[in-house]
Image (cartoon, rainbow, N blue to C red; front, side):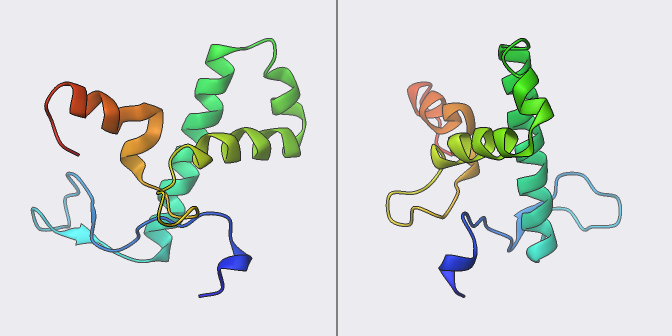
Length: 107
């Protein structure tokens, strides 16, 4: 895969699906559509949190496409691995991995 054609990558193989009626328990789902859906939801969550944190300053981000892209990329960059600066680790969203370690849990 040509890494110059994308900014970030996310695991799309055997992703835990939670409770979905037509899947067997403990069975993951796979495919690029899974990774695409995860990144779309994550991007939406980032933009929503950004707006909630700063509703006045976010008006620009709501109006201009590039402002929203910049906001999402800024937050996604905090979630990459040190080994591969394009590979996202979901547990790094909002420092969940660090907070879990502080409480004695592992992600």
